[in-house]
Length: 151
Ligand code: FES
Ligand code: FES
Image (cartoon, rainbow, N blue to C red; front, side, top):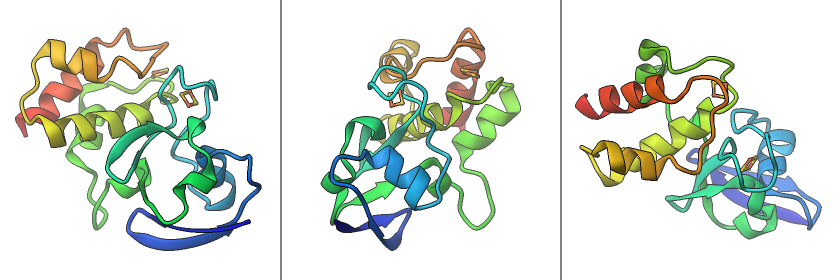
């Protein structure tokens, strides 16, 4: 089947198989590999994207469900060659090691700060509870979120 959707502000069309995930369509059909595929079961958050402004695991959404809707991926956060403040903060605080979790964490953090400009540590913990990181121990990730919030 053919779907038409808005991805990072651009109208896109692609052929899909009815059973494939939005994550597969973004990565393999639309050339956007920023959203990562780590578990494909909704457990790790590495595939987090915004669907009509709502944070979702793209591996749990059918591509067909995104037909006619708007998706924002990590690639859509930077503007005019400038990193989004959350991307900048992750980079500056050393919150990135292997980087596999990073796109999902950045999308989830950007979503959090849109809703809550000055989150407490508990609010950060809760907002990022669906995003797993095997490398950093989370301390630097918290530093990054606090830095982005300050800005
Ligand atoms: S790849 Fe989607 S939640 Fe892990
Ligand atoms: S930096 Fe490696 S999983 Fe988070």
